[in-house]
Amino acid sequence: MAGHSQFANIKHRKGAQDARRAKLFTKLQREITVATKLGNPDPNFNARLRNAIIAARSCNMPKDRIDTAIKKASGAAEGDNYEEIRYEGYGNGGIAFIVEALTDNRNRTAGEVRSLFTKSGGSLGETGSVGFMFDHIGLIEYEGNVATEETMFEIALEAGASEVESSPEWHSIICSTDDFSVVRDKLIEKFGDPKTARLSWRAKDHITLNLEQAQKISKLVDALEDNDDVQSVSGNYFIPDDVLEKLE
Image 1: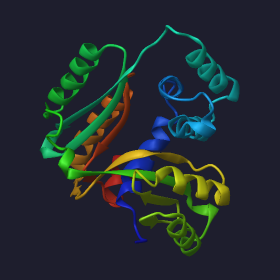
Image 2: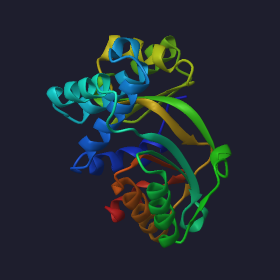
Image 3: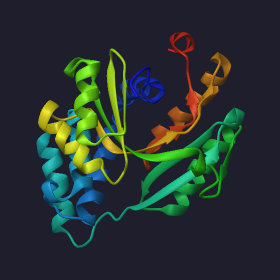
């Protein structure tokens, strides 16, 4: 259950780029708004809001901005109303993607996402067209220095995790969506706030990319993540370290 994480390989190299984007706080604030409106404004009684706050804190979003977003969302009957939409499609070379978005204009977002797929040599499909290639999971991630691989493995499994993938840089703890809140809270008690705590999509199998393929797929992923409405992008690809070094 422990070992080199293909999931972490894909995600964390992108995460360093995302954290530098000025748009990141806006996306985090949007998720906080939606989570607050859908549930209780107290994160102790709203698992989704707690996840959103953890994500915001891990990206150094100021506490007053977090509090303001919660207060605005919980106190106003009107205002921004966002709809959750999941898009599925194929990028260049048949790479499968799941794109999750929060939008106040379904037609606009669908058109923009479709255009990005088309320009990349791919196509946007119907809901369910690639979903069967992915597992919906709970994902909690910590930096590698919070614990040894053995310690994280033992504590995460005791908390109810189904898998632990570790490398010197990262620990990726995977659990069922039903067990997510319990596993997350037990790990927080032991290690503090994680860098990531959310429901995610993990490909059942990965396609290993060469440099040319990686350049094309990275361009699509960057374009999708740069869209204001897109919250997450998951794909069934893997970029080997030697290719990643050349890509960066």
